[in-house]
Length: 411
Image 1: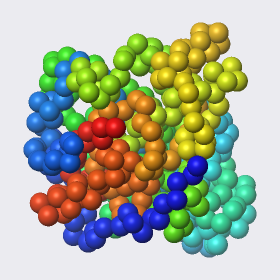
Image 2: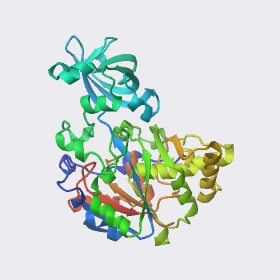
Image 3: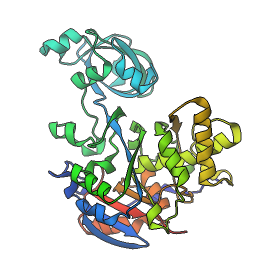
């Protein structure tokens, strides 16, 4: 049954001065709140290796933020902002970034009413000889509200990834209420970012430094990566009063076969400190928990299927995590694949049964957001204890803010 949840029950007072507008000079100098069994205490983030049980698996999202915000100009002088969301042609991220003269994207279009059917030129290109030679142009293929399908063309034979690097800006969150600055190019990106595709950073990972990662590995904690490309939907508020009416955005993810095998072999149990799975960020949680339902599809139909928003709540699932993972592995073996590529629209709200993740590293999220719902589900409904403490003890909020280490509620 789809849970009956009122979003107003997940509100809290977040004033503008509590939102971190800039990162701290040192990534690992942020504050760290630890929550376990109703008890809250605090540390500095660089202490986190000492707080993690050895023998665990720590999972990072290695997606990379692309400078996906482009500014164009009509011949009339009107400025049009184009924010690349999802590739359409070619549809694969790796392929579209390798395109050398043309590609098509679904985009958010700022000032869209001013854009008819004319070709747009990159704003300010005439002041830069290299950009002028590139001659990046945008053509509106179709439009629906504030989004549309946009065709990009350019000269010079460079891949679209290089075009974005030369022409685009990093799309920092709108709640920072400022323009992208030089500091964001480095700091709105994790150190381990690898695969281009996100328009928002998986911000839980922004706190990690090489010394912290090294100490984690020295403690005997296995580090693994998944890749979920974060879409602009991560910024969308829940506008419906009942969460059941909120449409969750779809995001693509990739998980290596070898990692699915390691999950299958682990007897994951929150009561056994040597078998914890620690997710870095809510994007890692959504990917890991989606795997179970992918496995169910493999068991019941013989092949994986995209994970729908409410599928965890509409029926009982009799399969163990190991059965589910083995079904994915069987499919990958038979298909000759070494990784699973799929989409998920999963929404994690109170009432969700966690099957994979035992601990979560995450920042402090916006009021009345789907991420607050996920946190509440993870800690057994006790999210206010965490947020009341953070508000009362000077923690900084949202993307550039402080961090937390949460232990899943014991059933």
